[in-house]
Image (tube, rainbow, N blue to C red; front, side):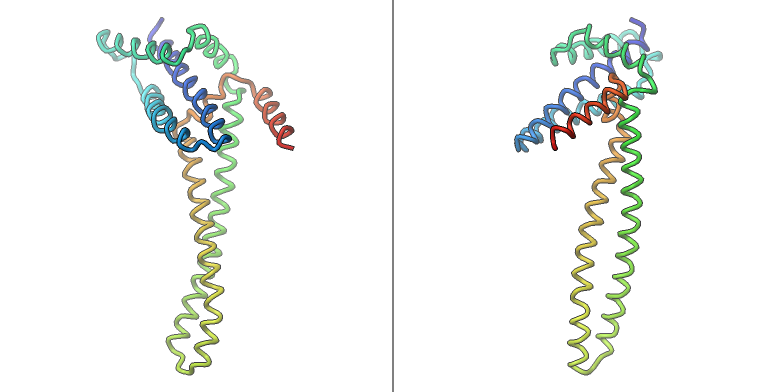
Length: 217
């Protein structure tokens, strides 16, 4: 097998393992087995994600034969360790090439980008609201410092309390959105979370989601 073709083959092996593991993780989450999820994420997802990233950057044409042979052996070892047949990997490669630009990967990537933009917009609105309340809190605090009368102080404190409660609530919302944004950015940067869907068509993926929604109803 030519070197460039073997690199694509290696990528497909790793993507298949990542896809299989993602399915296992989803099942474990449904069962509430969080320790099992953590083990798979640490022992499989994290290292294989690094391997996939390295494969995307790998310059196989400049590798010596002495370096390329261990690389081939490592890929075959990964394939055999995960009980993947060579036929399955090659079939997936063929499907990926046939569906290029119109696969499920295109749909999922587009979905990730849409959600990222939506969350970034939400983050801006939350930040705007936070700044408004923070300014209101600051004004009330300054007013409190300049107030001598005890009755007026109690009145300002009474007004401060709900403002601070809203600020805490908004801070929690901001952090939650920030977490979701970082997760989506990471998925887009690492590529594999959407590339694993490159072996099924857009129609197949959308049909699968429709069926899933029906089952939930």
